[in-house]
Structure formats: C-alpha cells, structure tokens
Amino acid sequence: MLSTYEDYEPEPMSLTLEEMASLHREMADETRGDAEALELYKELYTAAVKYSESRAYWPLWDKEKKLEEDPVRTSRHNKVIIAINMLARYLRMQGKSASWRDTLGEESENPYYRKRIGDFACYLVFIGSLNAR
Image 1: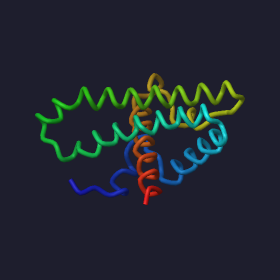
Image 2: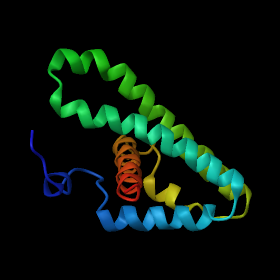
Image 3: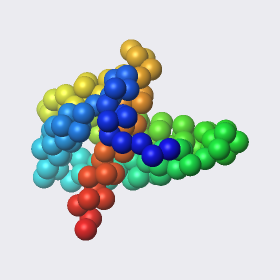
C-alpha cells in the first residue's frame, strides 16, 4: 500500500511532476486576470478535490468497498473532465491556445488519457494544498 512517486512514473501515459507543473503554469497564465476563467478554474478545482478524495482512499479500501464506491469515483472523475473541457473551451473562445488541454489528451483516442486527466486533477489539489499553508 505504501507507494512512491517512482511507483507512479512507469505507469502508461503518466506525467512527470515537471510536465504537470508546466501544464498548470500554462493554465494559470491563461486564466490570470479573467474573472470568468478564474470561476471556471474554481469549479475545476472543486471537482478535483472531490475526485482526489476518492482516489486517496482507493488503496485503503477492500474489494467490496471499491465496488460500492466505484460509481461515485467515476462520477467525480467525469465532473473533472467536464470542468477541464469547459475551462479549455472558454479560454479558446477568448483567443488563448489552451494547449495544456491537448497535452492531457482525449479518452476517445486512448483510454489512458482518462487516467492522465485524473492524475493532473490530483496534482492541482496537491499544489493547492501546499500553497494553503
């Protein structure tokens, strides 16, 4: 159960901490000074917090608890993806590239992109939590 970052790194389609930091920096730069974009980011962050809670407990749960909680975790993951898409769509309408969204990928192209988006959501919560000190 005790996992390290090195256990995560070789996973398919994983992102390095540096890659996640770069994507987050791009996102922050594109939302800076735009009240609507910041509100959409707040919605994304809220969804990420709820999703990361499900992911954080996952290794602690037995098989029965995982079966019980899986629909909630999936729903929370879907909300993260919707929020990411809404933010990217808005930023593109404002003339921004939102290339960070392209880097995260589309589940329709490869199912591992869904996991990658979930990883990035957890990174957002990680950084937000560190900065809340």
